[in-house]
Length: 341
Image (cartoon, rainbow, N blue to C red; front, side, top):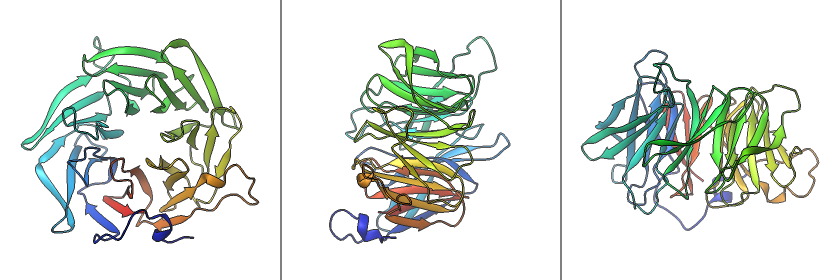
C-alpha cells in the first residue's frame, strides 16, 4: 500500500492531512462547494428516522485549523437527504445554490445571513404523495439541468431556472437508485433491475444497456461517470464488496473489477482532475484510491489500491473535491473527515 505521498500533487503545504467535523447526528448527505471563493466549505445532511432532520454548511477555518459551523447556515429538512449538491459553478458566475433530494428536489439559496428555500420541485402537483427521490446530479455544462432518479422507475430532467420538467423518462423496470451526467444531453442511471442504461436527450425513445448484473435482479446502487474520460463509468452492486468499472464502447463486459474491499462498498468518486484514479469506500471502514492506468493489461489476481485510509466506522459517503482535487471527504457515523491525498 502506498503512502499519502504517492498520490500527492504539488509542493509542501502547511495544512495537516486530516480534519474532522463532528455533527450532532449520523451524516448521510454530503457535498463539497465548487466555488473558488468558498474553499473548504461543505454541506452535510443528518440521518434521523423521525422527521427531525437538517442540513448544516460547515467550513474549515484556516487560522484556527478546524471546522466551524454557523447556526445561521443550518436549515430544517424534514426527511433525511438522499443527496446534497452545491451548484457546480467554480467560477462563481451564478447564485450560490444548494440542492437536496428526499421526498422531492429542493433548491436553496445560500447567503451570509442564512439559507432560503428557493423552490421545491415535484412531479405530482395533484397529489400529496410523491415517489421518493433516491439521487440526482447537477449538469456541469448546463447549470439549468438537474436530473433526478426515483423509486417510481423514472428519471426526470428539470429546468431549474424555469422550475419545470424538461423530460421525464421511464428509465428502468424497477426502482432507479442513481443518475449521473456524462455530457450536456447524455446521462446514465442504475437500478434495482440490475442494469446500467445510457440516455441521450436527443433520442428519448431509446436507451443503451451498458451492463447487466450477472445474477438477475441484483440491484445496482451507485454510479459514477468519469468526467475526465467519459468512456469509463463505475457501478456498485448492492451488498457487494466489488466495484465494476465499465467502458461504454464495450457494453456488458466489465473492463475491471476492483475486489479489495472486505465488506460491501457504499460509495465511489472518480478523481476530478485525473482520468485514471477512482476512490471507493464501504462497510469495511476503508477508503481506497485506485490507479486504473494499468487497466488495459490483464493483472493476475486483480488490481491493488495505491492508497488506503481506515476510518473510525463504516463509510457511508465519499466526495472528491472538484475545486481542490487533492482533498477527499468521507462521512462515517456522525463525523465528516477531509483527507489530503
